[in-house]
Image (cartoon, rainbow, N blue to C red; front, side):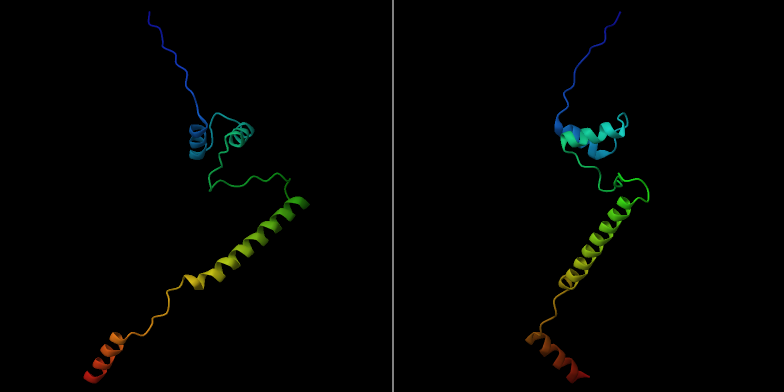
Amino acid sequence: METKKRSTAVVTEATAQAALRRGPARTLTAEEERVLRMRVGASPARTAPLERAAPERSDLEIELLSYEIEAYMKWRAREEARAPSRAAPAARPSRAKEKIIRALRKKA
């Protein structure tokens, strides 16, 4: 008769965080997973949808949506204001370039 060897595994916070970052835990309920994420400080994936605690179409949900829209519009305006600074700098005239242009104009 064979006996199975038993071993215990130690799960560190780092490995729990890494496992939770990979995706939702299949064996845990939503509440257990949320508690575990809070306990070890693991954030959900960036692509995960945000939970809504308010009942559908309540005043609270409408107010939260208005805050989200306002924050998005402020972020969008800030991004658009920052966009021109990312453009390539204007070309400065150089003596060598001017010399080449004059030479080409004389040939034409």
